[in-house]
Amino acid sequence: MSILSDKEEALLVKARAIGAEFVYEPEDVAKGVKEYLRLMDKGLTEPKQAMTMIPTYVTAVPNGTEKGVYLAVDLGGTNFRVCSIHLHGDSKFTLTQAKTPIPKALMIGTSKDLFSFLAKQIENFVKNHHSDHFESQSPNVHLKLGFTFSFPVEQVALNKGYLLRWTKGFDIQDAIGKDVCGLLQAEIDALNLPVRVVALVNDTVGTLMARSYTSPGKAGTLLGAIFGTGTNGAYVEKLSRIKKLETSPEGEGDFDKSSGVMVINTEWGAFDNAMKVLPDTPYDRALDKNSVNPGMQMFEKRVSGMFLGEILRNAIVALIGEGLFKGAHGTSIDENGPLFTPWSIDTSALSTIQADYTSEYTLTKQLLEREMGVSAATTGDAMAIKALVYGIGKRSARLAAVPIAATALATKAYENYKIAKSEAQRPEEIEKIDIGVDGSVVEYYPGFERYLREALRDIQPLVPGAAGLEDAIRIGIAKDGSGVGAALIALVA
Ligand code: BGC
Image 1: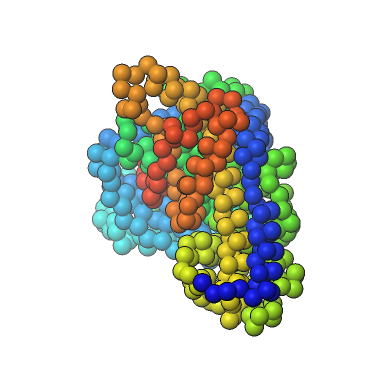
Image 2: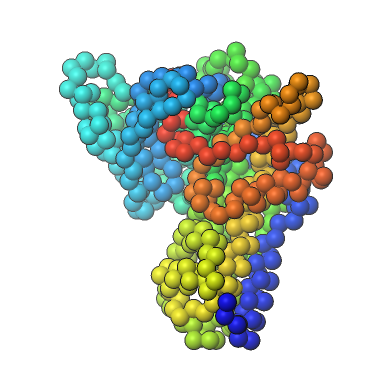
């Protein structure tokens, strides 16, 4: 380890102070959980809340015995995926897929441009992998397609939903209020494809379904969560708690009530837009001001991949502003480079830096050069940047504990687990509360689950009924959840 110069020491002290602005204390996590519980109830009772708590009309989760071949497409934040899924009926499946990045221009153009592009990708895929359907003479042989659309939609039936608002940098005004299944089907029909859109699925609902299909235990999964470009969760709620369903119009919104439950898409990215309990720093405020949707998705803007790079950039710019970085020890910073260009730092940079345990911070120095326009960075510089990254990443993971804890408590999943355990002959065999997760942040950010679990432990003495909660929760990756999940819902449709 090199000895730091006085200037580097001073830089590091300042960087640690900025990093400390991201500390999210146990009491803050507990306050977050209490506010989340309140907004959950409000969203289930009253329409048009920011944290929307959307009824999905999915009233059962799979158990692994489902079979068949289905198409699924996934419009997430960054890529468009088309896949076909073969469900084998023994908790296993095979998946063929094609993935295309969504051109940036289409994210802010017209709905026609976007949806015709999507239909074109479906055409390519079906021609490559399901050409038999093109040769088939019968017009009735359609492939069923589940459409994973990872934005807030007011769902009125399994295959119908009106777009409420865009998130994650999309901004196509003419699509707001339209049925997105209709938009996609129209473009599919324009290409004469033998494909019918039968289910509209949020990616979190897909993740919940997929995890339930593949998870080790017999009991279903409680919650599916995405920590990727954006963040959100969907969970299994009792019908009796979804009070706003009683006031929904007849006909549209009709569904099978026999299971007594329905999956709710929370849209927790919009948790606490009012900023009552969420942590806030100058770096968060600068990001929000510069975003396409100021004042919205305030939880998401502190947690998910689309935003962590920009928070880091703002924090580095502040550090540079202290005059301790630039030129101080031979380091040179490109003033027209990425550090001074909004939204140009990818969140994967944080994962790389966080995972850099080389003694001279070689990986961080390389990344600073390659992705941030900083050349000849010293070990002191790299350590300073890592102090910022640590603060931002850890806060994201601790924030992620808030909706997870609140969901386990509100649904009584945790209470039921405790009762089952106290009554069981072999308490160690009682199944834990299962949570399926997907997304680049939870998958690649080093230590994300560890920090999340630490936060769960922190609230145990602070939130009523939470003692022992962390140990009761099992978290598992649901890889490709949205594709398989959409297929599972298409199957039910
Ligand atoms: C969207 C959600 C989605 C989440 C994860 C958010 O921005 O509003 O619908 O589930 O991103 O992709």
